[in-house]
Amino acid sequence: VTRADGLSDDQMQAIAREFNLSETVFVQTANAAGTPARVRIFTPLRELPFAGHPTIGTACLLVELGLVPQTQAEVRFALQEGIGPVPVRVCRIPGQPPYAELTAAQRPEYGTPPRTADIAHILGLDPADLGSAGETVRAVSCGLPFVLVPVRAPEILAGIAFDVAAWRARLAGQWAEALYVYARGYEGELRARMFAPAMGVVEDPATGSAAAALGGALATEATIADGVLQWWIDQGIEMGRPSRLYVTAERAGGAVRAVRVGGHAVRIAHGLLLA
Image (cartoon, rainbow, N blue to C red):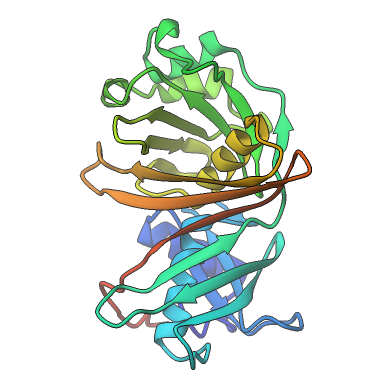
């Protein structure tokens, strides 16, 4: 939603609830130096300090509308979000949809993970289905906390039967309460599903902030001291709304220095909100 300076917090939340998308972004005039816009990101239930997919889509739109000038194939700027400035770069190649990549505003932060048995119960899975290649359930944030849940094979993702009552009893209110369930595919990709009842999101077809958390965790756990790690994540397949996000993590001196998430975004509709 562009030209959103005149909207109150309550109005923005009401609009997001009416749209009922995973997130709705309100573009306002920046009040911090060096950023072309301030963006407020709302789920149907609450405002988020940071979100990946909305950042990517908004960056692409601002360039497409000419609100961020682009004189070359690539432009770099930062969007002012609740967590602080989020660096982005946007690439436009003739004949292709625009591509945007964000750099996560913070490096991986770990919290106390919930019990594996509780997560299996919430997902309607056998505890033996959880865990893959030595990876276990962990709680990680690169700006927004998620419970990262590895499962043994992509086919298990289709068998998830999310139990909201069990989630409310066993996970709601914890530091990380959104579930990002992932599996390693058969051609090198990762497959994922994301559930966030506290945000009013039954399931999300693309979750850049969760992809950043997963990339940060995998990079933290990597054995290389220096180098660049890359993954792509297919999500939304079980919903019939497939997406693909690309994740890059940089390690130097044995530590994670940066996590980046990118993807293509296409404008599919426009309209006018009436007061």
